[in-house]
Length: 429
Image 1: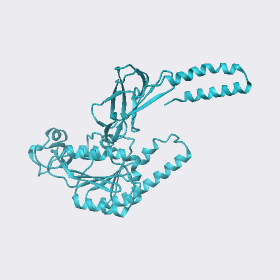
Image 2: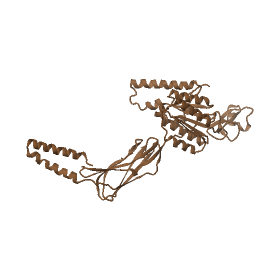
Image 3: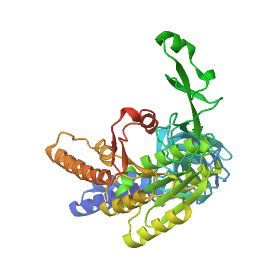
Image 4: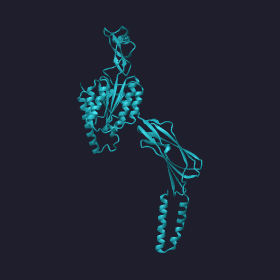
């Protein structure tokens, strides 16, 4: 394949030739001699027809955490019978990864049997399953008049980017129906060998062995120690992954995995429902494999448009009523943007004995990407969206449900650890 250089050379050649014929000047014809020699060089110095390159990609593993950096190495060996004076190598990267160090595009030369290696570092920016490669190579002759292009599909590798989650140290949620086994929920219980929670005044039914003598001596009244027992509970997470939650879906997935990891650590039974155009269900289980199942599914989850709200409503009710007990703690994670979806979720929460909403702010998420924040138009749209969102939250609040508002600019672990310091809206049943 020839480069545009030949076309420009031939165009110049015929232009000068026509000028020489038109003006009948021999000077024009003499000036054609260098162009004729150059054209001969173009056609008699082609690149090799077959490059004979061997390209091997070196990758330690194919599963990576979201935000993790990957070092990619390519080894190229010239197994052909001809040296390559100018070799251009481009390793194709998916849009979901970004280049962090070095380059995936190099220009080099290779003698017969010579081997070269180049490395570069990319960052896994988004969860999902992506393809690295293939590798495109282009060999040019030394005067850059012709080239050969090859694509090496054998270098194509699939990588899996796992969604990230945060470690939660303290659980501010409470449940009305705890179980006896040790878990993240505390409940006051008399007995020995429990965790100390505080001191209160002594009453006649308390054991004498629990009297706190330092506090008694200080206040001249009898005080007794109070203890707590940590208990487990069943947990159902409901993830709203419908179309209007697309821009905040990554934050919602992080919240789902963070909560699941925390509860499963204490042997609680955790279930998950993902609401899209269809309903994906994971039954209650306390196995550590449950977190792996959630993660594997959430790698591929994308927000989808709902075609039939009536069918979706029936699917949600059938799955929840049939597979999840009424007294399990239900956490509904939704930005509360779509009125019809909100009506379904409110109906689900009202049917449960112990439920609340975790509402990430989709407006805060999108507002941080707006550059002209002082623009009157942007401010007007922003205020309008805030008003609509507040209307939906008030609607949930008036149904007697609990709402936790989460500004996604705050890390989820920080939000959970300091939840008592954040405004919590509570309705009355």
